[in-house]
Length: 279
Ligand SMILES: Cc1cc2nc3c(=O)[nH]c(=O)nc-3n(C[C@H](O)[C@H](O)[C@H](O)COP(=O)(O)OP(=O)(O)OC[C@H]3O[C@@H](n4cnc5c(N)ncnc54)[C@H](O)[C@@H]3O)c2cc1C
Ligand code: FES
Image 1 (cartoon, rainbow, N blue to C red):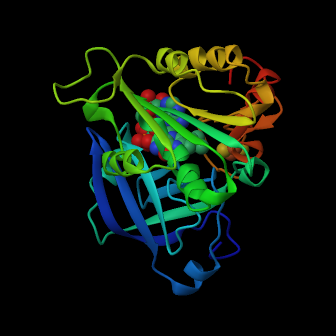
Image 2 (spheres, rainbow, N blue to C red; image 1 turned 90 degrees about the vertical axis):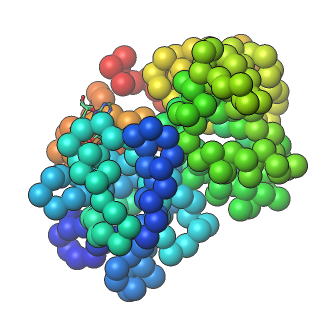
């Protein structure tokens, strides 16, 4: 961190703002201090506290890959006080960032395996970080499959990257929108993520599944994966419990004995089954 005060944020300049979907923006952030930029390291799956002076902090995953140096990206939906203040910011403005915090996706252990990514709606950002991470190390993994769904075509985020992924021959991308969310031009599937997964029937052989989405999607996707032969220790997800300090001090995020900010946010389905039901 930039000083011994663990709550003191890095100052980050907003280099680029992209409007992803209604109420959803991506910021590309660069360190204003070169020394801090050179020292900064993170791993995929980690998150940070993004702040506006006088407004407060919001927790977002780091949505860019650690293989892309010099900047970090976050994608957020405008939901309340801090995210609304962030949404009013313009390119060139400076915001605060504390992090990286939390554990990581264990991609070292996934080398040589097939990877199946399943994301719903605004939950693509944490998976986008790990997807670009493994794509930048493409020869170290076997088949890569991505299933991404949103309520409607307008709600899909990273549309420019979905086009790029669908043009690649070294991965399989399936996109879907909920019934009624399609447009006349839509070429993807129409249906809820768990049903499309059932239709795809991906093999669970030597495969790791990474799932991130709204609770209802997760609820119906885990049983589909078990039906396909995935074991709970091969299914990964990332939790978004409300947080404050991000560093295991305030107790805001704990579930039973687990501090989601320190012990997570990445968990296997097996680990989730050992947590009290309220997670
Ligand atoms: C590890 C982690 C990673 C996250 N990554 C992202 C991300 O990449 N992009 C993104 O858009 N959001 C992400 N979130 C959720 C995000 O932190 C909250 O949406 C945000 O902090 C809301 O801030 P606010 O001040 O605008 O809202 P507030 O004014 O604090 O609240 C507005 C409304 O949102 C609800 N809310 C706030 N936080 C949460 C939460 N964590 N879960 C459910 N409801 C909540 C409140 O109860 C209230 O109804 C993540 C959360 C965690 C813990
Ligand atoms: S957010 Fe403070 S202990 Fe986890």
